[in-house]
Amino acid sequence: MIGLDWASMVGFLGTACIIGAYAYLTLKDAPNPFVLHGTNLLGAALLTISLLVHTNWPSLVLEGFWAAIAIFGIAKAIRTGRKGQEREA
Image 1 (cartoon, rainbow, N blue to C red):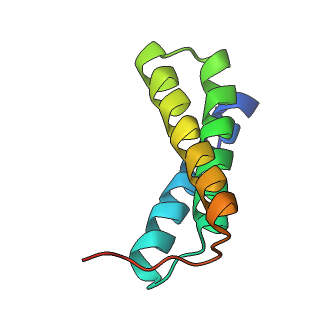
Image 2 (cartoon, one colour; image 1 turned 180 degrees about the vertical axis):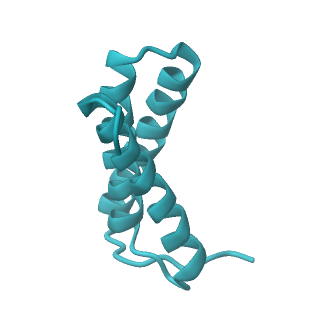
Image 3 (tube, rainbow, N blue to C red; image 1 turned 45 degrees about the vertical axis):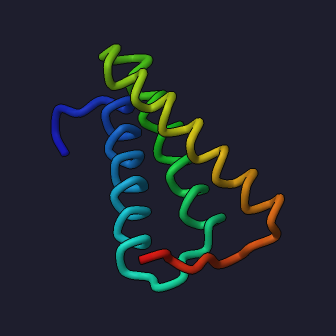
């Protein structure tokens, strides 16, 4: 990838994490919440690093909420002791 700086590369890695987590949620019948929310949290953190260099305030706010929801999901999984969760139809 010519012309991309380190911050953009980190941002692309974060994007890949979030897309991967969404694909995992879609494809897995009983997704492990630690994998799902952990991957989302990592993606949000990597995108935040990129956005601190190439500031885009709406996207930065989005990543803050994305990370907060992921942290809540991890905390909920720890409280309930669930490694897999069933989907509700």
